[in-house]
Length: 92
Image (cartoon, rainbow, N blue to C red):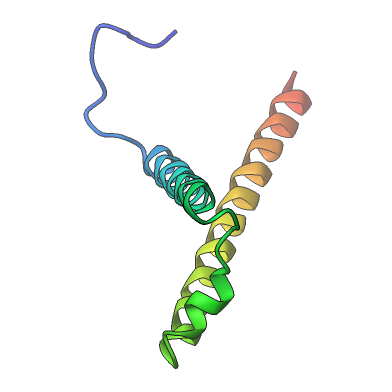
């Protein structure tokens, strides 16, 4: 069992990442609901991004890279956990 008398020195990077994703998702949800409360329709994200001109492609690329990184990190964590479970089961 872990020692609960001491506070951890630093937050793990995985926790910080998931907090950032949660904050990003929550802010998007609140922004969309506020816009719908005022205008009655959801905003069109594609039309908003297209008004940025050529920077639109950079933003879409950054978002795709972010989602790819999240998927890669999730897959890596899952495979490590399964590998650990398999090693524990084979040694028992």
